[in-house]
Structures are given as C-alpha cells and as structure tokens.
Length: 355
Image (cartoon, rainbow, N blue to C red; front, side, top):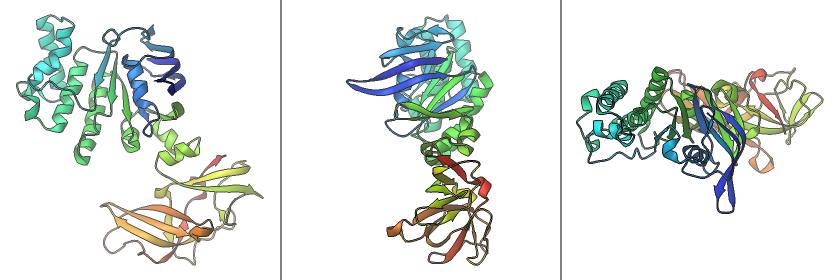
C-alpha cells in the first residue's frame, strides 16, 4: 500500500500534505502524532471516507483514489468498535461477508476461522453487551479480517480500554497480525503503544511525516527536536558548540559526543539514561562538567522512580531535568526532595541535533 503526493483537508484548511508513504506487505505500521497532526485524516483518506484534494492512494499497486470505500478491499476497526448490539458475535463477524454475498458455507467457515484466531470461538452466540471491552475489541478485529482485506486500518482501537487490558491487547493484536500476515496501519497518539507494537513508526507533525523508521531507530536517533521530545519526552537542552563543547545559555558545559556538530544544537538526554551521583563525584574533564541540581519532586510508580531535578535558577535560564530510575528495593531508594545531587550520563548516550 502507498500514497503519493497526497493532500487533504476540510474547507480551506489543509490538514495533510505527504510526498509519499510506502507500507510493505505484511508490515505493522503505526501512524503516530499529537492531536490535529493529520493521522486520522490520513486513515480516512486511505479508507475512502475523506476525498483527497490531490495525489494517489495505491492498494496492491492499484490506484483506488477515486473509488468508494466498499471497493477498496480494506478492513476497518474503529475506536468505538461499532458492533451491532442486536446481533450475536458470529453474526457481527459475518456482516461484511453477507454484504459481499459470500456463499453461506464459505462465510460460516471464515467466521469460525477468525473467531478461533481471536480466541472467541466459545462466544459465538453471545451478544456484544455480554462481552468485556477487550472481547468486543477482538470481535471488531475478527469482523474486519473475515473477508481477508489487503490492508487492515485501525483507528485508536485500544483507547477505550483500561491500562492493564490495553497492554494485553497490544500483544494480542500483534500476535494476530503475525499469525495471518495482513498489512496493518495503526493510528495512535500513544508513543509507548506505537513503539511496542510496530515494525515501523511514521511520526506526523503538522500534516507531514517528521520521521519514519523502526521503533529503535526513531527513539535512539531522532532527526529533530520534535521527534526526540514526542518519543520518550527526553530532556531537551539548547546549547551552542564552542571550542568543541556544548555550552548552554547559563555557561554550563554539557558532556556530549559532538561528532562534528557546530553552531546551535539541541542536546537530548533520555530520562532513563541519567543516574544520580554524590555531588562531590563524577567530573568529566574530557567532555564537560556533569551538573548539580536539587531534587524537586520524587514519585514511585511500582518498578520505577520518577524524579525532577532543578539545575540552576529557573528565573535565570535554569532547567528541570526528568530522571527515571529502576527501583532497587526498599533499602536503596533515591534521594529525597530537597537533596542535592549530581546528574550523570554517558556522554555517548546524549543525542545532539543541529538546529
């Protein structure tokens, strides 16, 4: 599946402006981005619910841009699931097959196959109201897969689930996708969800693709400050490369491997890459001085501690750093609020982006 020179919008407002996007057969691609970036509009244009102003939508090499939604050979799973409450699970799954006038024996076989795939064969005669949220979500997936679409489009289908069930369904969806090999395009605003589930992630910003790549590529090697901030909410520090070092507006030198960067840069420090050391320790004369700060907030979330460390006066360009530490047990808790600490990281772990 692919799009070429695609623009779309509503009224006089252009929402989407993509040069190209190629989705490989059997790939799980997540389209990620903040609200209003164009990700749902992209899905709707591909599905045929919103007309493209220009460009092409290609499915299996066929230009479907001018075709109605029901002729595009696409499966759809909505945020609301859109199940028919008066029909049984099996009847809901069979709906698309019935519309396509599939022979009854074949339809029955396909319904049985996909219900087995999503582990709902025992629930075939139940109504949607008798199912949990996760089970309803799986019915919606089964219905979309029943007629073997070329591409399955999913519009934030997990957003209505609680955190535990949402996590379970992430792995369940991925299992289903790998089992059948269907190409899936998954729209989400949740970066953790996109990184967990995807072969590749396309990050949209202002209707354009900011970066596309594997989860590891875009997390470890963001090309822009927007990507670095959106994926992982890293600590972004503005600096200028002076005499081979990254110097902040307050005159502090941040330890970082600059690899030929010059002029204004953004230094990205991931929360999980920062550790805390005694204020008297951990100098790095080769790369710069690790900063001192005061713990302004400390919170426990199970296996992880989340801290905020204030470095410098906030009224004079100081910055609050977010730090994420793995819990090491009750006898080894992090410094408390008000304590002075030194922030330490591997200079090679700092991502430097030219502005």
